[in-house]
Image (cartoon, rainbow, N blue to C red; front, top):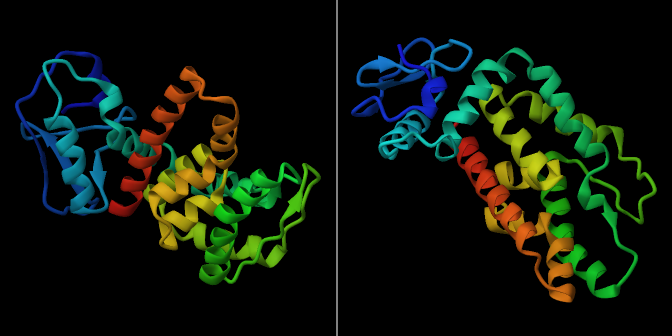
Length: 238
């Protein structure tokens, strides 16, 4: 049996394949041997599409396996070894963002920043309200804005029903954007991934236009953007 723990080694297999559905889902194999998670569980996925995408990651490796080029595998390992046993805690962690979501705290000035925030964020709040019957309140500055209990409860019910794989991806998207509302709008309400990422970085974009771009910050954002896109893809295939 093979485990992604061996990812630091040279490539030790010829091909990766996605198996037919079994009781636990769709397995991934390397040269016919089932892949195991770091926790020793079978790497078995909820859909054929996700299993094939993970197999493709392994087939794309060169002579040396590069862990950073296996983002879907990493997410699957997290879902199987971690989130599956702690779904309630994961839901709680995601919901913490909803209580103080990025979209609900607006800059009182400068006017052009306030306008940019409103243009990017108001449509997302409208999507969330329409999808979940969950209005959210906005305010200016950093003073806490209390959100309607019914709105938070509606999001909790929706998120709690997702299952370990989608929860894993939603948690990553929420952490990277600082907004569960952006993450849900993309995952469940039709917001384009590019628009979602842009909405999460309205302030940074405004700062770059005004002060110029910092190279190291740009590299970090690029890496985080790739992580977001992997999580978004993982969510849709789960």
